[in-house]
Amino acid sequence: MNKHGIIFILLVMIIVSTIMEPSFLNYKNLINVFRQISVTGPIAIGMTFVIINGGIDISVGGIVGLAGMVAMILMSKGYGILIALLAALAIGILVGFINGYYVSKGLAPFIVTMSTNTILRGLAQLTTNGQPVWGIANGYEIFGQGYIGFVPVPVIIFLLVFAVAYIILNHTTIGRSVYAVGGNAESSRLSGISILKSKIFVYCISGILSAITAIVLTSRLASSDPTIGLDYQVDAIAATVIGGTSMSGGEGRVEKTLVGILIIGILSNILNLAGVSPYIQQVVKGLIILGAVVWDNSKRKNK
Image 1: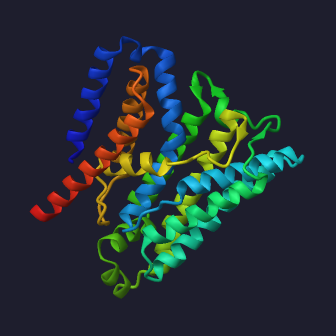
Image 2: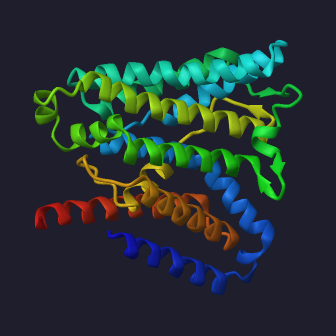
């Protein structure tokens, strides 16, 4: 899907949403849309790195669950915000490193990350025997509930994540290597690019951004439980493939993923306003992902 095509779809969705639900353009509702995409948005940005590199990351939801639980437990035991933040980010980096290492050794990305996701969910359950944790340290609420002027802090965090990701992918050597490995890993290896470093890099990026989502989400809810972040990979993959990132690797733009994130956010919002069952919403998102993948496959065959 070309750049102008996806923007046209976004504009059509905004118009249709406004006609269906005039309350869509209310300030409070628009803020709600942006706050929502700022939760899943960082994960979609991380997913873009991984898919461009020729992989997939199913473990993002598990990282959100465990990182959020650990951060909340530390604060409940009297540790400061900095310790909680560092612990959450460390979990993201560690899981990303493990995923990247094993994928670089030739194991299937889907199997590796599905396995780590299952492990992480189990660990999140073990930390509190499946019970939620309530209460946050003073000041922690700013990450999910704060405002700078009239702009929610989560939105600012997301925009900063997007800006850094854009610079890395478009203006750095390691960003070019992400594309190169995704396009042709063997040629990249022969040209001197480390497949191990490239895989670990993209999965660590995905892990860090999943941990950032955990921080924003637990701050917003002032609580955590082992199930938070469940199925977040669905929205992340949907936004990425809608944005035109090829599931075969080597092709994609983080700015188009941003448009895909907006499309998914608006779709979820209008379905909620219309009172559509969340189960039907899952079906719709699944069909969108399938359609985008089929279209991508057809485009590659035509090339």
